[in-house]
Every structure is written in C-alpha cells, then in structure tokens.
Image (cartoon, rainbow, N blue to C red):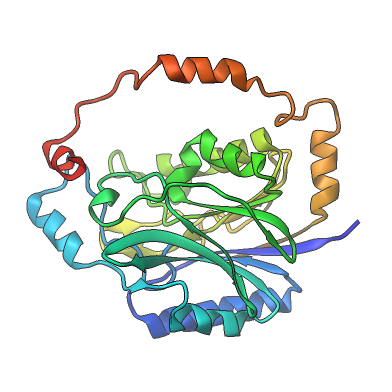
Length: 307
C-alpha cells in the first residue's frame, strides 16, 4: 500500500500575472506543508478566465468587449510555465492557462514538475460562445507521472460522460478536472450552496468518479471576475463516489490522503468493474443511428461563429 496525499484549490485568479504567481506560490507552499505530492489548481489560473460568457442573451457590445479582454496567450515551452515548474520542484502540479499555437488560442491545462511538462491538454467541449475566444481541442489522452497514470479535462468537459470514460479507458487512475465554473445565469440564488450550477458541478464530479471508478480531483476558481461569480467547491472524490475532502463553497485548499491502487481495487474488485462490463458494440450502433435529439435553435450570433 502506498498513500498519496493530494491537495486541490478553489482560488481567485485575474489578469495580473505577478499576483497569479504569488497565489500559486502560496498554494504550493501550503500543499507542500501538508506533505502533498499532487496539487491541482483551477482552470485559467495564469492570467484569469473570460470576463463573461456568451449565448443568446449576450449583446453585440458585450461580445466585442469579451473579445477585447482575453487572457494572455502562453506557450508550453515559455518562461511562464518554466517559472511554475521551478516553484513546483518535486511536487506534481496541474494548472490551467491560455495556450498559444500560431494564430490559435486554446483553453489548456498542463501537468508539470521541476523536471518539466508531463502532460498537456486542450479543452474539447466549449460552452456559451467560448468558441469565439478559443479553438477546440481534439483528444483525451492519459499520461504517466511519478504518482501514477493521470488524465486531465477542463470545466464543461465534465458534463460529458464520454470525456472521462475516454481517459479511464486509456488507463487514467487519477483524473483532474479544472474549472472556472460560475453560478447560474438565471434564477440565481443568494447562497452559493443553493445555486443550481453549484449542485450540478457537485453531481458531475461524483458521477464521473463512480462510473469510471477513478480518483477524481476537481479544482475551481473562486470569487468573481467580470460578470462571473464562481462556485468554489474544489474536491477530491474516491472511486466509489465518496467525497474525501472539499472546500465547500469557500476559497481554500482541500487535502486528502488516498492509497490509489487499493481504492481502485476495492471499487473494481467487488464484481462491478464498470470498464470491464461495458457493451461498446451496442453503444456504437445507437450513436451511429441517432443525431442530436431536441436540439434548440442556434442563436444567430453563434451560428455565424460556427460557420
């Protein structure tokens, strides 16, 4: 048995890069003080997220303002990530940033140590006009690290069971889900605990863990940025769907110690091994036969953007 101590953050990040570095440095110090070997930071923690989300309620003026207020675009080999790697040392750190690749920008995540980048990912699923700001990624792939085989996804990806399943089938034992997940835009609640999107966030995290029988680590932004208010709720979920540690709806650092191999054996060894008991030959025929059911009309602005 080998215990792994994991920390995950709900923290606030904006455009000022030096403030981002200080916040990341503080979280690394706190995680290291807890003997953590893995620290998971939020989506877009180097330079912040978008100031608003689009969709059918967004005015043209708001859309143009959003496109003028993008986060800094960084490269995998650039000085910004090298600076984080130097801070990380032997700690495995997963974080989100805006990645530049030629003229394209991606909502991206990276896992690194002081030795360099272990794995990178570009967000596949794009909500509410995010496609106006980022190019979509095209694959889910697990990768090996000093603490085990991992996979990454970002925010809206967690709403799609196929995303987590693809990582689990590629051997990921630990999946990190980085978010800048805001409160609901309509029928808002005063208390974050009562917010519909907070509840949705928590349901997705537990469901993705238990259906794939993996250790699931969900980070999130905190506070506010532009018109967005984030729900926090960073957490570590075991392969049985049990929440091992959470920040709740407050900023903070949640920490848990898990024997990952043993936890997976317990979840998968009781006769219900979800990855083994799949019937993909049946699913394939259903997927091939059906398109999108009950699809609402696409708003004119988004239809143009997709064209």
